[in-house]
Length: 102
Image (cartoon, rainbow, N blue to C red):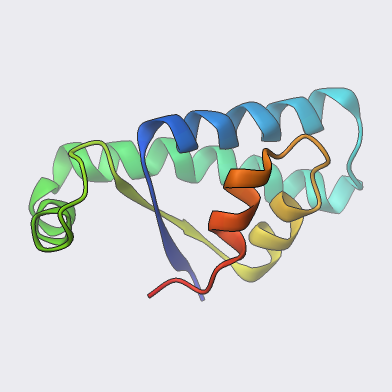
């Protein structure tokens, strides 16, 4: 099951940076590396999804009052676990991802 985490552009950039750092530094188990590569793919897909179908995310942003750069990044439980295990993940992002999405 994929769970959407609504992240602004700076949070998505920080997530991508932390994932790339973990992959390049060899800090992760090879299986976790596969899940982290999937996270990088989802970050790209989230932007593409919004470009092709902008209305669903726009409706959520309008109702919640979020900025225009907030997009849903859909992560599986194993992807989330792999991300949260990254030592370089900023604490603010760790806290945002550790919360149960609403």
